[in-house]
Image (cartoon, rainbow, N blue to C red; front, side):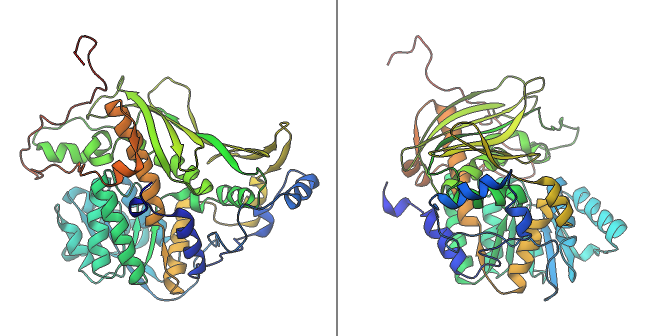
Length: 466
């Protein structure tokens, strides 16, 4: 790979840890994070060679509640379901925090969240602090807030992060944080600016704040499965929500209200949703993909222009392979999990009730203890814990940059998507320097040219001459 186009994930993790991130070596309840299936697992763990030495990789301090300190005023940019959820996650993470400004493309969404905040939290957002329109994010950021929570449709997030950083605001960025190479480069450049300003940036890749994932990550770093030699990641589920077009909605309004089904807004579900699983592999392995060869199709989707299934083979920069599989179709078998193959064993993990390491003979040598987690911690919700960690970093003045790390997983998903759309191999070097930009040139809330919003078909017709 060309060095100028590469971002060393290992260097990033090391520098993040050494920057003084809270709890770089220990996390939360030691009893929970080291729970084992039996005494033999401790003996096996002690006998293997660590992949990384403690202190050279970042582990969040998963305390139940943020430490008291500086009062923080948050602005919410994007007041739909995820933005509303993130607002309450922030409020539930600490004392001395509040929401003072709201922004969304549509007034009904702003008013809906304002009413919910007033009813459930006693927070009254005045009309003067409710901003509407495609440029409403600027008004929120300029309104005197300390932090911003960015939960707009994904295509807008790089621009909003850029402006927030220019204005010196700490950012929480819902995933994915970019949907195309132009957005990727904006995120990477802005993350460097945020680092220079000592800002704290957390992203919505909540597995990084999920106790069983953090515990499993530590076990892998300790060398329990040996060197990672490959794996498979899955997000197969039923169809997501959609919005039928209503009378009076413009082209742009319909697409934004139905954003999860349009590739220019969501990045397609391999980027919007499956990035979680891809991120787990890039996080645990510390690797970027070198190439991606994938395929996908559209069978059941009702609105929009994107696929409903993908299958991608990623070759990582050290030559190992990760298989990625995602699907959103009703009536099919579901699976949301990750599998790692190592030289000494395997890890099977999922968000619900799974985190098991086995040796090469299939014997269970470590299993995460969910009952111990419930007994020893009060907060198990990773959506809240990511805000706890964010607030603790801000209040302790210990900068953190998760945007650079999440950008790698997003770019991997972009590579897989573009390979499936085209039928060609995509490469890290080509995609990270590509001029591909999904933002419509005629973006406005009135009439737009809809002719370009079509589902792509890979390859060539059989009778087409070469």
